[in-house]
Length: 130
Image (tube, rainbow, N blue to C red; front, top):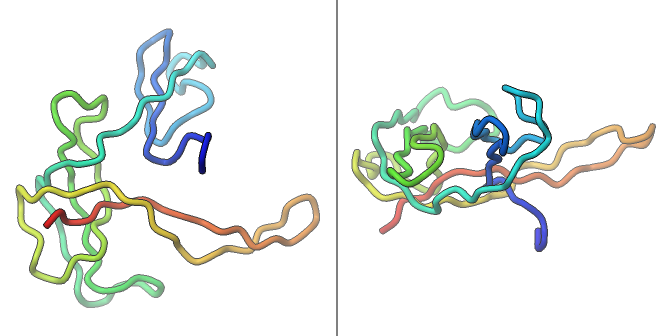
């Protein structure tokens, strides 16, 4: 990903000031293409969370944890709903510090110009800082 913007960035419209996550190529409010990239903070604090230990959908490991993350007063996006990964059941607490991370997800076949290709994919989440 060297030299490319990653999923840890967002866009801010230079005309109307709207901040968008995930990043956009056109502002969804004023339709301007005059955008700038802004990095998300790498750490935040857990506001609240849900932890699913049973009935987790296929392809996901238990526990499946989703949390509202406070990214701080200076962040263009104050809060973000995200997955918490690599965290055992019962360990996460409100107020814990978590760190942004990118992790691989199963590849996915796609048709590109009438040719089937397997696309490597990644997703983002947060991990508990210990």
